[in-house]
Amino acid sequence: MTTKYALIGAAGYIAPRHMKAIRETHGDLAIAFDINDSVGILDSHFPDAAFFTEVERFYYSLQVGQASGSGIAYTAICSPNYLHKAHVNLALQAGTNAICEKPLVLYPTDLDDLAQVERETGQRVFSILQLRLHPAIIALRDKVASGDPERTYDVDLGYFTSRGAWYHASWKGVQDKSGGIATNIGIHFYDMLGFVFGQSRANVVHHRADDCAAGYLEFDRARVRWLLSTNRSHLPAQTRDGQTTHRSITIDGEEIEFSGGFTDLHTASYQDILQGGGYGLADVRPSIEIVDHIRNAPIEPSRCEQHPRLKDIAGS
Image 1 (spheres, rainbow, N blue to C red):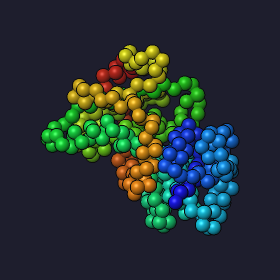
Image 2: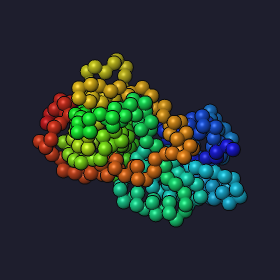
Image 3: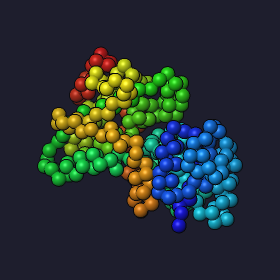
Image 4: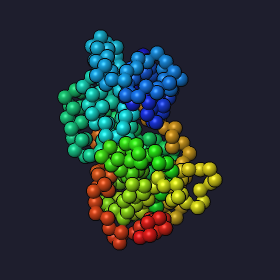
C-alpha cells in the first residue's frame, strides 16, 4: 500500500529533499502548504498534489481527508524553525504523524509540550537526524564503542558554510526565529557528537556572533573544540577554489571526511521511519539542550581550550 503524505513548507530550501525522499520510498504527496506560491518544484515530484497558501484551508482539507479515510500517514514539516512546534502540533491534531526538519524545536520545554500532544493524539513525532545514518559517522561510532572504554578522544569540529547578505535579512538571521547560528546550522553536529561519544558533560561558549560561534564541549568519551561560521572570509586556506563549504572533524589529529553524502540521507531517514525506526523526542533532547545553553551562556574565552581557528577569526 502506498504511504500518503502532507507537507508544510513546500517552497522552502529543504522541501525538495523531502519530496525526493517521499518519491524514492514510493510514497505519494497528497496535499501541500506554503504561504508562498513559488512551488513549481511540485511538478517535478507530485504534480497532482493539492496545494494551499492558507494554513486554515490546508488544515481543513487535511482533517476532511482524514475523516473520509484518505489515509495520510505523515506530515513532513519544512517550515522556518520557529514554526516547527506549531506545525508539528497541527499535524498531530489532524491525525497524522510528523516528520520534522532540524531543529525539531528551539527550546527543551517545547519537547515536553509535544510529548503531551503525542500522548493525547496517539501520533508520533520524528526528527531528521541524518548524520546518524552517514556511513562515516556510523563507522566512527562503532570504532569508539569497540575501543578502549577509558579512552577520551580530542576532537576539532569546524563547519564553514558561506551565506550571503540575504541570510541575515531573512528569518535565519533572527535569533528568535532561527535560534541563532549554533541552532540553525550546528544542531546536526551536536547530535552527531552525542551519538558517537555519549552524554554531554560540559558546555563552554568562547565566541558568539551573528556569523560565527565557537566553544568547547565535553562528552563521556571526547573533548571537543568546535567552530561554526557562515562568513565566506572564514573559509580555511585549504578550501578548494569555487567551494563555499568546508566540513571537518579531526579526531586525535586524524581527519574524518564526511562532506560527501551529507545532503543525500533524507531518503534513508524516511526508509528508517517506514521500517519502524526513526528518531523521536527523546533522541532530540540532548542536542536541543546543548544549543539552548550555547544561546544563553556567558562568553568565557579563557575557559577550556579554543578551536585553533578562533584566534584568527575573532582575535581572542
